[in-house]
Length: 493
Image (cartoon, rainbow, N blue to C red; front, top):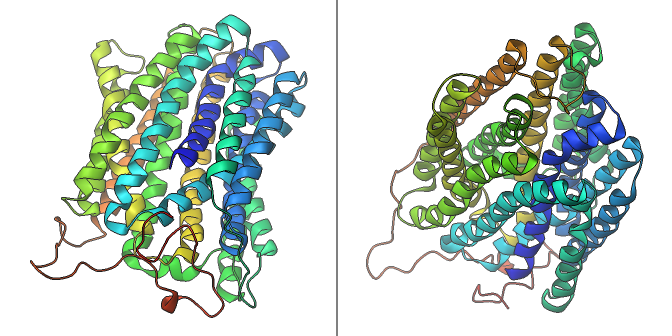
């Protein structure tokens, strides 16, 4: 648990700190907002495209070596990013960082899922989420502080010592879990390429709306992306060893939990980015002050994540998840009202608290609902699908937020992020973005409620044995290897 938590800290510290440095990178390298955006989007695209691939590889060949390899690549890419002097070199290195994160994040969560019984899985996941959220707090604040003292390159340098410690612990603690794929099991390369190309095309379509191309070409790219997604779905339904196990998504409750995860993840990343840019562009605050504002949101996640684990043991995951969605929706409403207006600061920061608390309450029970009752050899891909939903939504949320901010800045005659602008068009871009976040959170609430089922946890009658959540070798396909991290009693070995 400690090893995977440290890996999560590194990943989220890296991702949350770079957004604070976007105006500084744009200014020092002399690039427009359209180019600077790829520092964020390059990382998120490669992370999203790589998650399913590395999740599947973890299921087929074991997770330990992928987890450690991802940490090593992250260290090297971070060091080279700190030395880069060209925007496209930096973007390529951010793509490598995203691939490293794709090898780390889904396999870390799968390792945790293997180590906990289903009735305690939400608690274990909530601890990991709490630590990841702590990195989200530290990222913008520490990133802003490093930015003002040493420049944006120091944000990448700080990843190196964290990564070295994480590698050392992983080598010492994680047990070898090499596996032999069963007959016919292999990586679906064609499916991986289709999924990656579809996502890239969709993000390019969104970027076209920001002024990097015509609306007609943007619509054409959207249509192409939709076609590629349809081809991908058709492909995974007919191949014997698909990248996505369709059976994982056929259960109605689990499918709705996946959809809810997508709808909640879309506004989360957009909100954090909007807060950082709004504070620096409209309010003219320093990078440190912008980081503190994001820390309020992330801090609420840290405080409420452990509470979510406890609530999930009393109430059904559907109840807790739905309440979290509704809280976030109210928070986004508060932000939409507060942005650019004369509303008191308590409304702005109160909205951030509600958004963070809602996400903290939502995530662990929803993830537990996805992962529970699955055998160990399917948890990696099940969590990989969840990670793809999460990262695809976050990538699209970030892209939409950047598009709306860029459109507002362009209309006001600005082409970089290194400005202080209070023009009505700039403020309007932020407000429209906040309203989109509201709609997504409301849709998530309705989707979560649609899962149905009891509001309270149905506990077994007195004296009745509790159902076992540990996958049995008898349930495994022929030649499948049950994960050695779990002993016969379901405890961590």
